[in-house]
Length: 153
Image (cartoon, rainbow, N blue to C red):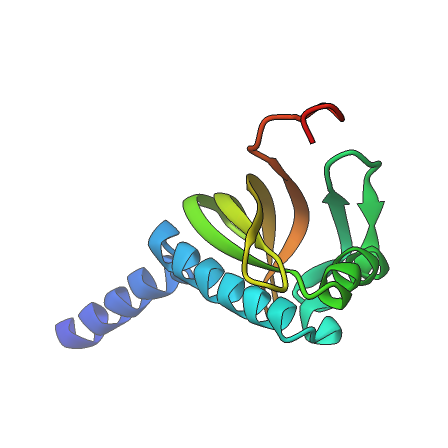
């Protein structure tokens, strides 16, 4: 009888502990894998593979323009980059995660079709964990290069 009680108590303790939460290290690894897919889809000009990496209600905050919303905005902005042969190298610097939301801070290099660096900058992405994995929900980026005047160009 004591053995049955012990087994039942053990099962209750295990059952009450709930599902395992993802560690920040696990989330970062998943985001870095997603970023590798993002870079690959951009370089390969696979617009549909690229667009579904964002949530349907995504918001893009590119420099020098208004907030853009939805996957159609993703297709428009990044489709233009694909058409121009531009790709991006991402480097994750930090990830903070709570539940099904994560925030990534990183650096980026924008690479032209002739493999020259067109720009270097930084980005911040808010990720949302969905049934199909981590997806970008908010994406903001900007240049780290100094602003040049027309006379300097």
